[in-house]
Structures are given as structure tokens and as C-alpha cells.
Amino acid sequence: MKPAFRFVFFLVLNGLTSCVHPSVKTDRGEPLRSITLKPTPARIERGRYLANHVAACMDCHSRRDWTLLTGPIKPGTLGAGGEEYGKNYGLPGRVYGRNLTPAALNQWSDGDLLVAMTTGVNKQGKPLFPLMPYRNYHQMRLDDALAIVAYLRTLDPVANDVPTARVPAPLRLGLRLMPHRAVLSTDTTALPGVAYGRYLTQMAGCADCHTRRVMGKLVPKAPFAGGMAVQVKSGVVRSANITPHPETGIGRWTRQDFINRFKAYDLAHFAAPPVGDGFNTVMPWTLYAGMTETDLGAIYEYLRTVPPVKNQISVFIATTSKQQTKTNHFSNPKSE
Image (tube, rainbow, N blue to C red; front, side, top):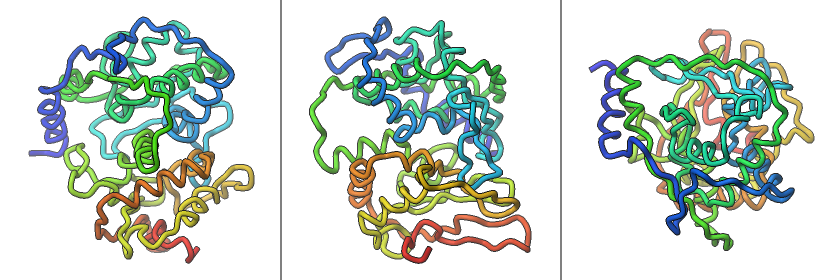
């Protein structure tokens, strides 16, 4: 069976147990389709932090400058969409980050946005391609989901006519079976220790990129062990092993090592250099670098609890013999 058809088969099979018309409600049973939130400065600021630095919505929903290391967001494109994802990500077809600014969402209600974000169905009732990580958000805390919506309303309106996704017809059928219901937690008490790290890790989508996929599905026996491949201009970049394996993962990293790796890309002092035909990475370092040290530390503590997997990763393989292959870029912070 060809890879594209295996991918479609997986979507259809998975969709048979999913809801075609998903509901979104709180854990108290309150439906959210008709919700109208009350924006406050604190809520908007929380949404700004989550959308830019934890869930990193702005990663996929802006245009990135791939001539520079880490592909920082191009000025004037924040939230405006247009970034293309296709064969370079191993996808059957082409999909695009949608425009999330008020120029495109001014006719969307708050409930419309909550449904799309947490169940994968847009205002018109059409399913979103699962590159949108709504499965990470379907158990999000209600306050955090509302905060993100409140922040999106404050973005500068940018008119940007984003192309329509192009996916094979059988895949479109499978997509209609993918969305599922969402139950958002109304709990506002602080999550303890590792539980908080797990919550942030899921919102940040760490497993989505740091887990190898087969037929479009994350390999269940090796979560966070890396290996997902993306074609970039100068070669193939693979996600790193972030399990606590001592040789091939981050098992020898301290909490401060982990935090320092992210903070090295803080735009307060990091200026992305041109890459030319050399190494680049799709990891949105400059966005995640904006996380607080507390939150980065919580993610580290959670990752320490996942099963260690021995999986040596060459994170970059160049397409020309003149370039050097970079191995284990992520696994030894003290060597760089």
C-alpha cells in the first residue's frame, strides 16, 4: 500500500470512533458554542503569552524567514497565515496556516473560535487538517482557551488571502471523520509539579514534532524520541530525542541546561544570522524562548518522567557533499 493511501486509511479508521459533529463544553456540561468572553488586560496578556510562547500559535499562523537561523517570524505577518506545509513535511497535499487576525476572523464568534481550536471544525462546519493540533487542546483549561481567543482579537488586522488547502479527495473524506468532542476544564487551581509540566508539554505540542510518525500517526512506543523528518532548503532536518536517555537524549542535562538552551534564542539578545546553504531548523526557538524559566523548568521535569528511549538522531543531513552533517545538535548543551 502506498504511503499516501496508508495515511488516508489511518484517518478513516481513526475517524470511525470520532464525532463527525463534535461538541465543545466544560467539564460541568456547559456548551460553549454561544459563549461571549469578557476581555480583560490580564486575560489578553495571558493569551499573548500562550499564543506566542507556549502553544506557539504564531509559529504556523505567520510567515517565517527561512533565510535566517530558526526561521523567525517575518515582520508584519504575525497571525496573518500563509505558511505552506506539504511534501517537505511528508504530507499528502498542501495546507496553509490560516489568517487568525481580525481581518479574517471578524465574522467569527468567540464560540466559533473555541470550537475550531479544540475540536478541529471551522465556522463553516468543515474539518481542519490535523496539522492543526486541536487534539492537544481538547482538554485545555477553559481560562487558557478564552485567553487565547481574547488575544487573537487584539492582533493587527492583516488582509492576507491564504490559498485553500489542496488535499486528495479520499483524504478529504477521512478528514470529515477526524474531529472529536472537547471538554474544557473549569478548574483554576494551580496544577502541581509534573502535572503542570505535562499540561504545558501537551499545549506546546512537543510530542507532535519530537516523535516519529508512521502513516501519519505518532509511534506509540517511542514518544519524544525524535526522528520526524522535514525537508529544508539545504537538506533534511530531524527532530531530536528529548527523552531522558543519557547518551542519545537529554538524560545528562540539568534543569538549567534545558532552560539555557531555550533562553539562548531570546530575541532580547539573539539576532538570527543568515544561513545561506547551511544548517537550519524548523524548531521555533525564538518563540519558545519567551517562556518563563518556571514553565520551561516544569516541561523539563515532566520530560524526566517519560520512558528513556535509545535513539541516536542525526538532526541534519545536508544535500551537498560540501556541507557537514550535524549530529545530536540537541543532546549535549555543554559542547556548544
